[in-house]
Each structure stands twice: as C-alpha cells, then as structure tokens.
Image 1 (cartoon, rainbow, N blue to C red):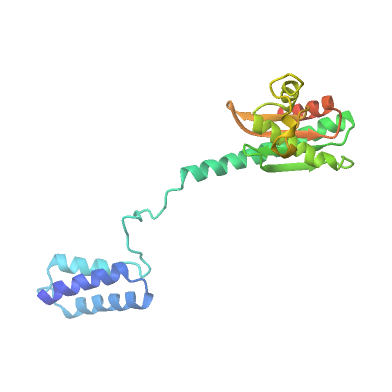
Image 2 (image 1 turned 180 degrees about the vertical axis):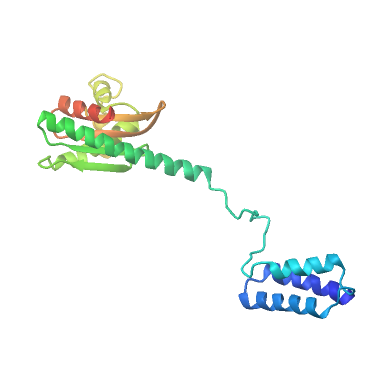
Length: 217
C-alpha cells in the first residue's frame, strides 16, 4: 500500500502539471490499469475515489496556480478599460460633432475643415469639406490644440492676447501652434475637458458658429 500512496502522489503531479497530451493519456491509462488490477479489498474507498477522479479529468485540463483563479478569467485592467471607453466615447462624439458642424457650414455656404483632438492634443478626427482651404487643415487642428492646451476657447485666448493683456505674445510660443483667434472650443464631459474642436475656413465669426454647432451636437 506504500507503493500505491507514492504512485498516487506521482500521478497527481503528472496529471496537474504536465501539459503534453501524450503524457496525460499515459497517466489516464495507468490509473485505469491500477483500478482493473486491484481488488476492492486492496483499495480503500478514498483511494478508489481519488484514482477515479484523476481518470475522469479532461486531458487538456490546466493546473490552477495562485495567479490563475478557478474561473480562469483574468480581471481586466480598470485603467485600460477606462481609457478605451473614453476613447470610444470621444470618437463617437467627434463623428456626431463633425456631422453637425458640416451641416452648419453648408447652411452658411462656406466649406470648412473641422478637427477634433483628445485631451492631449492628439488628432481624433478631421474632416475637410470639398473646396475648403488647404491652410485650414493645419489651422483647424492648431485651434483645437490651443483650446485643449489652454483649457479655454481660442476666442477667449484672443481677448487675453491683445496688447497690454495677460497673454500678449502668446502666439509666438510653442512653435507658433497657439492660435489667438476664434474657432477652437474645449469639449467637456461632466466638467472635465476631454478634448477640443477646431474649425477653420470662414471668417472668425463663421468659424465660431460652426464650432459651436458641432459642440452642441
């Protein structure tokens, strides 16, 4: 019976930790052979139950470890999920904003470029209407970048960038990316800025109106 106890330990280790299908099959065959060769008197109910359980385990069963719960479903990284959800939400919102902004630009009768960036100033979506100025591609993006970088509309920044005002000369820093005329507006979600929209192609007043139409979508 000492032999059987040692064999049970070996079979348990092999069945739990060896992944090769061939070895698992050998273990299963050995268990079945022992069951057939040993009489009921030689095997206690506990031992027979142990061997039967090992024989019935799936051949592809993986050993459980402290890092692998029984459910085998790794918990998702909350931060990653949150970032993905935010990105997905902003992209969907950007599409709706661009559609609304384009409709407003068409109503005005001026082709424009509409750009949406995230809270890091990275491009999320950009749309250039037929006939829009090529220069508006960069200008609309810089308007959106400025709005998210300063956490204010470019219209508000323009007022502060006038001579003798607090932000005078602002347009000369950051490689000239900061725009100090209207058309860029931050996008906020529950009071938190998550991006910005920038519009270029018309007059300052037209750009602001189109950007606001997009923001209101």
